[in-house]
Image (cartoon, rainbow, N blue to C red; front, side, top):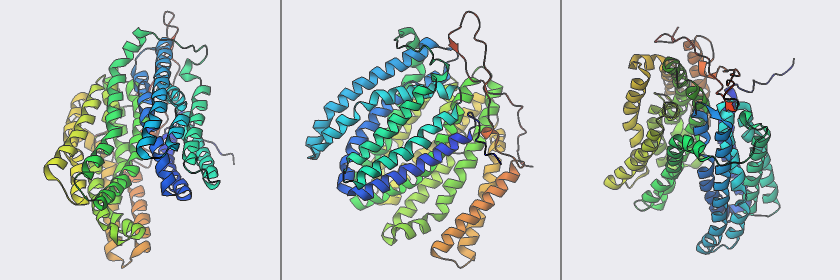
Length: 509
């Protein structure tokens, strides 16, 4: 029997990429760090952290703006790529100049050389990040996922080879270099979403002005979100003991690594589909409902599963000294579950031409935990978790109200879309509690039985609630070439999403 891969536009590639990203991120950190040791890993982390901050700035500037623009022309694509690469050159030079400063502060001269080695990668990362917007506009999910599915194994292998040969922190730099080069090569050879042939660098200020209304708020939001956690930890470090800080950090990262899979998957699918329907509000509402359903189906079992098994998981992996981490993780996971009940507002606001809301929301999610932290000054990981989770408790009702008003739908409509996830999650919770309290098992057998039985019950009930089919959002939207018209030959049309009939309020059989 011949094995057939999913099509180039199949959303399942996005899910595969997100799961692999979470796995490789953890494995790479642990595997290379274990070989080179804490000291060398700390040195490499300084350089990598500085590079990744700059990479966010150059890579997140234009992609969403390119996806959202109704009539994308060659001048928009070429100007965006050119501007991003120029910014990458500037930030690369600044990164190289910053190296000696950080090296002196850390007392490790090698940091300057590590950052000098990373600096030339920033223009390549800028090109790749901007080009990804063109491919996302065309919903070329297989190409986008190949960046990680191919690049990360090669990067991990290279890093481990250098680590085993005694190269220390350079192993981390080599891994980052390989990942960046693989991504750049794939983005360069992909055709740039229809504008690759005859591509030439240029800066059309009018074209860039058309991109700014989305590009600048999205960049600001990305910068705030990427720095939010670091700022919170720095503020927390001024209040609590180092042991409480470490427990809080581990708890937050445990939840974040899990829920990031959902956010990355849904946003990658949602952005091009919703933007393609920006002129058809009813079809946009139908598609948004499908995406909200997928988000609930993916997010609820992860979050509620962590709430249920965190005590066993932490006790078995880290021991009794980390017991407070389980409580903190349960609080954060329970709060995160609420954020999966109303869909992907980030992509919706971009599609509606209201990207500034994303920056405003990012600032609110930064300010609220810091305000609570300042007022309550918690001394435990549980208190820190309660401060961190405040936005997850306060914002969902507000955002759900805004979404329903924009789409012209009722709360019952949204409830009907997420009903399969809610029903399956309730069944999973009952199953896991029965395993934990009714079987007499303990330790690894209880954890394994809870995960297996909970996952099986969730999958069966979700499948039945969906009518024995995959979620609509995971169906492939096949792009149809559009005729740009005789007077607009350089236009690059959206890969149009197929409008679907509005489903019934409830999707339960």
